[in-house]
Amino acid sequence: MTPQYDEIAAHYREVDRVVGPYREGVEIPSLLHAIGGLNGASVLDLGCGVGPFTRVLRRQGAAAVLGVDASVAMIELARRREREEQLGVRYEVHDITGLPVLGAFDIVTAALVLHYADSRSTLERMCRSAYANLAPGGRLLAIVGNPGLQPEISQPNGFVLHRSDQLREGDPYTISIPTTPPTSLAVHYWSRAAYEEALQNCGFTDVSWEPMLGLPADAEPVGLLFSARRPEGGGESRSAAVAAVGAGRPV
Image: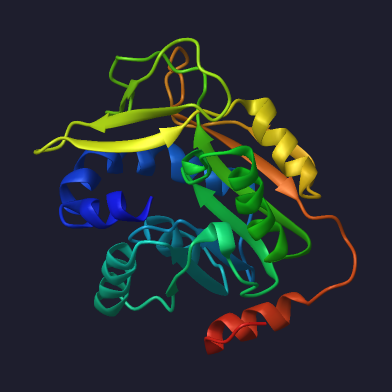
Protein backbone atom coordinates (compact mmCIF):
# COMPACT_ATOMS: atom_id res chain seq x y z
CA MET A 1 0.00 0.00 0.00
CA THR A 2 2.81 2.42 0.81
CA PRO A 3 4.34 2.90 -2.67
CA GLN A 4 0.98 3.67 -4.31
CA TYR A 5 0.09 6.21 -1.63
CA ASP A 6 3.52 7.85 -1.74
CA GLU A 7 2.80 8.35 -5.45
CA ILE A 8 -0.73 9.64 -4.79
CA ALA A 9 0.65 12.18 -2.30
CA ALA A 10 2.37 13.96 -5.20
CA HIS A 11 -1.02 14.94 -6.66
CA TYR A 12 -3.29 14.55 -3.65
CA ARG A 13 -5.15 17.82 -4.24
CA GLU A 14 -6.47 16.40 -7.50
CA VAL A 15 -7.57 13.18 -5.79
CA ASP A 16 -9.23 15.17 -3.01
CA ARG A 17 -11.11 17.24 -5.58
CA VAL A 18 -12.82 14.05 -6.77
CA VAL A 19 -13.42 12.17 -3.51
CA GLY A 20 -13.73 15.11 -1.09
CA PRO A 21 -17.41 15.96 -1.67
CA TYR A 22 -18.53 12.36 -1.01
CA ARG A 23 -16.35 12.15 2.08
CA GLU A 24 -17.76 15.41 3.44
CA GLY A 25 -21.36 14.63 2.54
CA VAL A 26 -21.59 10.92 3.37
CA GLU A 27 -18.63 9.36 5.13
CA ILE A 28 -17.94 11.98 7.79
CA PRO A 29 -21.60 12.52 8.81
CA SER A 30 -22.10 8.74 8.96
CA LEU A 31 -19.00 8.23 11.10
CA LEU A 32 -19.92 11.02 13.52
CA HIS A 33 -23.48 9.72 13.81
CA ALA A 34 -22.20 6.23 14.65
CA ILE A 35 -19.73 7.56 17.23
CA GLY A 36 -22.48 9.55 18.92
CA GLY A 37 -20.25 12.00 20.80
CA LEU A 38 -16.56 12.76 21.22
CA ASN A 39 -16.25 15.08 24.21
CA GLY A 40 -13.10 14.11 26.11
CA ALA A 41 -12.43 11.01 23.99
CA SER A 42 -9.03 9.85 22.80
CA VAL A 43 -8.99 8.72 19.14
CA LEU A 44 -6.54 6.77 16.99
CA ASP A 45 -7.11 7.06 13.22
CA LEU A 46 -5.60 4.17 11.26
CA GLY A 47 -4.53 4.86 7.68
CA CYS A 48 -5.13 8.57 8.24
CA GLY A 49 -3.65 9.75 4.94
CA VAL A 50 -3.34 13.53 4.97
CA GLY A 51 -5.66 13.72 7.99
CA PRO A 52 -9.18 14.71 6.85
CA PHE A 53 -10.86 12.54 9.48
CA THR A 54 -8.41 13.39 12.27
CA ARG A 55 -9.09 17.11 11.89
CA VAL A 56 -12.87 16.60 11.96
CA LEU A 57 -12.65 14.37 15.04
CA ARG A 58 -10.57 16.96 16.87
CA ARG A 59 -12.94 19.80 15.93
CA GLN A 60 -15.88 17.71 17.13
CA GLY A 61 -14.50 17.54 20.65
CA ALA A 62 -11.98 14.70 20.89
CA ALA A 63 -9.47 15.49 23.62
CA ALA A 64 -6.55 13.81 21.84
CA VAL A 65 -6.22 12.54 18.27
CA LEU A 66 -3.35 10.54 16.77
CA GLY A 67 -3.24 9.66 13.07
CA VAL A 68 -0.99 6.91 11.70
CA ASP A 69 -0.20 5.90 8.14
CA ALA A 70 2.44 3.76 6.44
CA SER A 71 3.09 6.43 3.80
CA VAL A 72 5.82 8.87 4.81
CA ALA A 73 4.68 11.29 2.12
CA MET A 74 1.07 11.29 3.35
CA ILE A 75 2.15 11.87 6.95
CA GLU A 76 4.34 14.78 5.90
CA LEU A 77 1.35 16.36 4.14
CA ALA A 78 -0.76 15.83 7.26
CA ARG A 79 1.91 17.42 9.45
CA ARG A 80 2.19 20.34 7.04
CA ARG A 81 -1.56 20.90 7.30
CA GLU A 82 -1.28 20.76 11.10
CA ARG A 83 1.43 23.43 11.02
CA GLU A 84 -0.84 25.63 8.90
CA GLU A 85 -3.90 25.07 11.10
CA GLN A 86 -2.83 23.99 14.55
CA LEU A 87 -5.50 21.77 16.09
CA GLY A 88 -3.27 19.67 18.32
CA VAL A 89 -3.47 16.52 16.14
CA ARG A 90 -0.38 14.29 16.11
CA TYR A 91 0.79 12.11 13.23
CA GLU A 92 3.16 9.14 13.13
CA VAL A 93 4.40 6.75 10.43
CA HIS A 94 3.33 3.18 11.19
CA ASP A 95 2.25 0.12 9.21
CA ILE A 96 -0.96 -0.99 10.86
CA THR A 97 -0.25 -4.67 10.15
CA GLY A 98 2.49 -4.43 12.77
CA LEU A 99 1.33 -1.49 14.83
CA PRO A 100 2.80 -1.20 18.34
CA VAL A 101 0.60 -0.28 21.28
CA LEU A 102 0.45 3.51 21.11
CA GLY A 103 -2.18 4.02 23.77
CA ALA A 104 -5.46 2.82 25.26
CA PHE A 105 -7.85 4.80 23.07
CA ASP A 106 -11.57 5.24 23.51
CA ILE A 107 -12.11 5.10 19.75
CA VAL A 108 -10.14 3.72 16.82
CA THR A 109 -11.22 4.73 13.32
CA ALA A 110 -10.16 3.25 9.98
CA ALA A 111 -11.62 4.77 6.82
CA LEU A 112 -11.19 2.68 3.66
CA VAL A 113 -8.09 0.92 4.98
CA LEU A 114 -8.97 -2.71 5.71
CA HIS A 115 -9.61 -3.55 2.06
CA TYR A 116 -5.84 -3.33 1.47
CA ALA A 117 -5.42 -6.59 3.39
CA ASP A 118 -4.05 -9.17 0.94
CA SER A 119 -4.93 -12.25 3.02
CA ARG A 120 -7.10 -13.31 5.95
CA SER A 121 -4.06 -13.26 8.21
CA THR A 122 -3.26 -9.69 7.16
CA LEU A 123 -6.85 -8.65 7.75
CA GLU A 124 -6.74 -10.15 11.23
CA ARG A 125 -3.41 -8.46 11.99
CA MET A 126 -5.01 -5.12 11.12
CA CYS A 127 -7.96 -5.87 13.38
CA ARG A 128 -5.66 -7.00 16.19
CA SER A 129 -3.73 -3.73 15.91
CA ALA A 130 -6.98 -1.86 16.47
CA TYR A 131 -7.98 -4.14 19.35
CA ALA A 132 -4.60 -3.78 21.11
CA ASN A 133 -4.87 0.02 20.98
CA LEU A 134 -8.38 0.24 22.44
CA ALA A 135 -9.20 0.75 26.08
CA PRO A 136 -11.57 -1.89 27.49
CA GLY A 137 -15.03 -0.95 26.31
CA GLY A 138 -13.60 1.11 23.44
CA ARG A 139 -14.92 0.95 19.90
CA LEU A 140 -13.52 0.42 16.44
CA LEU A 141 -15.40 2.19 13.64
CA ALA A 142 -14.28 1.38 10.12
CA ILE A 143 -15.46 2.24 6.64
CA VAL A 144 -14.76 -0.68 4.29
CA GLY A 145 -15.34 -1.22 0.60
CA ASN A 146 -18.89 -2.22 -0.26
CA PRO A 147 -18.67 -5.77 -1.66
CA GLY A 148 -22.03 -5.35 -3.41
CA LEU A 149 -21.03 -2.56 -5.79
CA GLN A 150 -21.42 -3.07 -9.51
CA PRO A 151 -18.14 -3.09 -11.45
CA GLU A 152 -17.20 -0.84 -14.37
CA ILE A 153 -19.61 2.00 -13.54
CA SER A 154 -18.89 5.31 -11.86
CA GLN A 155 -19.77 5.30 -8.15
CA PRO A 156 -21.07 8.35 -6.23
CA ASN A 157 -17.52 9.37 -5.25
CA GLY A 158 -16.14 8.86 -8.76
CA PHE A 159 -14.58 5.45 -8.15
CA VAL A 160 -14.78 2.83 -10.88
CA LEU A 161 -14.20 -0.75 -9.73
CA HIS A 162 -12.46 -3.04 -12.19
CA ARG A 163 -13.31 -6.55 -11.05
CA SER A 164 -15.32 -9.61 -12.01
CA ASP A 165 -18.72 -10.47 -10.56
CA GLN A 166 -17.36 -13.75 -9.16
CA LEU A 167 -14.71 -12.77 -6.64
CA ARG A 168 -13.50 -14.93 -3.78
CA GLU A 169 -12.41 -13.62 -0.40
CA GLY A 170 -9.13 -11.72 -0.70
CA ASP A 171 -9.11 -11.55 -4.50
CA PRO A 172 -7.29 -8.45 -5.81
CA TYR A 173 -8.88 -5.83 -8.02
CA THR A 174 -8.25 -2.22 -8.95
CA ILE A 175 -10.09 1.04 -8.41
CA SER A 176 -9.62 3.95 -10.79
CA ILE A 177 -10.21 7.58 -9.79
CA PRO A 178 -10.93 10.08 -12.60
CA THR A 179 -8.10 12.49 -11.87
CA THR A 180 -5.68 14.04 -14.33
CA PRO A 181 -3.74 11.83 -14.81
CA PRO A 182 -6.00 8.94 -13.72
CA THR A 183 -5.22 7.38 -10.34
CA SER A 184 -5.32 3.63 -9.77
CA LEU A 185 -5.52 1.78 -6.45
CA ALA A 186 -4.87 -1.92 -5.87
CA VAL A 187 -7.23 -3.35 -3.22
CA HIS A 188 -8.78 -6.68 -2.20
CA TYR A 189 -12.31 -8.04 -1.99
CA TRP A 190 -13.75 -8.96 1.42
CA SER A 191 -17.36 -9.77 2.21
CA ARG A 192 -19.28 -8.59 5.27
CA ALA A 193 -18.99 -12.10 6.68
CA ALA A 194 -15.20 -12.03 6.29
CA TYR A 195 -14.93 -8.77 8.22
CA GLU A 196 -17.24 -10.09 10.94
CA GLU A 197 -15.24 -13.30 11.28
CA ALA A 198 -11.92 -11.42 11.47
CA LEU A 199 -13.27 -9.11 14.17
CA GLN A 200 -14.67 -11.96 16.23
CA ASN A 201 -11.42 -13.92 15.91
CA CYS A 202 -9.58 -10.92 17.36
CA GLY A 203 -11.89 -10.69 20.37
CA PHE A 204 -14.28 -7.95 19.28
CA THR A 205 -17.93 -8.09 20.30
CA ASP A 206 -21.08 -6.11 19.44
CA VAL A 207 -20.25 -6.01 15.72
CA SER A 208 -22.89 -4.03 13.86
CA TRP A 209 -23.30 -2.36 10.49
CA GLU A 210 -24.17 1.30 10.81
CA PRO A 211 -26.30 3.42 8.45
CA MET A 212 -24.65 5.50 5.74
CA LEU A 213 -26.22 8.94 5.71
CA GLY A 214 -26.54 11.61 3.04
CA LEU A 215 -27.34 9.38 0.08
CA PRO A 216 -30.43 9.31 -2.16
CA ALA A 217 -32.78 6.47 -1.27
CA ASP A 218 -31.83 4.45 -4.36
CA ALA A 219 -28.05 4.99 -4.12
CA GLU A 220 -25.67 2.26 -3.03
CA PRO A 221 -22.94 3.51 -0.64
CA VAL A 222 -19.37 3.21 -1.86
CA GLY A 223 -18.29 2.07 1.58
CA LEU A 224 -19.99 0.33 4.49
CA LEU A 225 -19.50 1.35 8.11
CA PHE A 226 -19.18 -1.11 10.96
CA SER A 227 -18.78 -0.70 14.69
CA ALA A 228 -17.15 -3.25 17.01
CA ARG A 229 -16.29 -3.14 20.69
CA ARG A 230 -13.41 -4.37 22.82
CA PRO A 231 -15.04 -6.02 25.83
CA GLU A 232 -14.83 -4.41 29.25
CA GLY A 233 -12.06 -5.57 31.56
CA GLY A 234 -8.81 -4.32 33.02
CA GLY A 235 -6.52 -1.90 31.22
CA GLU A 236 -5.48 1.70 30.95
CA SER A 237 -7.87 4.52 31.72
CA ARG A 238 -9.11 7.19 29.35
CA SER A 239 -7.13 9.86 31.21
CA ALA A 240 -3.90 7.88 30.77
CA ALA A 241 -4.42 7.57 27.02
CA VAL A 242 -5.25 11.26 26.61
CA ALA A 243 -2.21 12.30 28.62
CA ALA A 244 0.10 10.00 26.68
CA VAL A 245 -1.13 11.08 23.24
CA GLY A 246 -0.92 14.73 24.21
CA ALA A 247 2.65 14.29 25.42
CA GLY A 248 3.70 12.32 22.37
CA ARG A 249 4.68 9.19 24.24
CA PRO A 250 3.42 5.59 24.11
CA VAL A 251 1.28 4.21 26.93
